[in-house]
Length: 164
View (cartoon, rainbow, N blue to C red):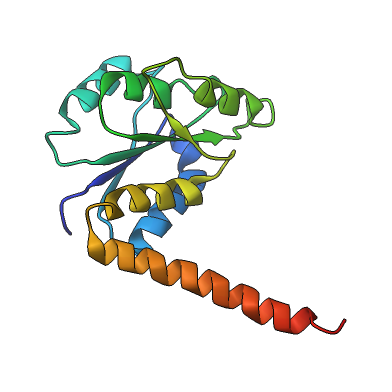
């Protein structure tokens, strides 16, 4: 397998079912990735070590999912200059995912985290692809194909509902 360029991280293995949607998107586009648990609360030293080495390992985008207080995306964004896409995860101890969403989206100036919908790991993966496609014409072509397929789908639906 090629060296990963996207790192998909989550605060707990209980987030893996949600975060696997980002991995599915990256697989579809042929983007190599890593998938790991990095907890801001339970293993802060490991999080610091991870952030200190992530860029030198060739990672270009981080997709970070977390539930509850959801500090992981913001802490990672504070510790690295790489773009971070935050995925608020509706966990069993969350307030319907709202606590996670608000924790991730309310970052202070100079510590941006691009934030998707609660459990929106699919779109987080797609954002990572779009970021990489800025300097990768092959990925850009694949994105154009996806957009065309979406337009074609709507055209088919339009034909189905015409005349009702």
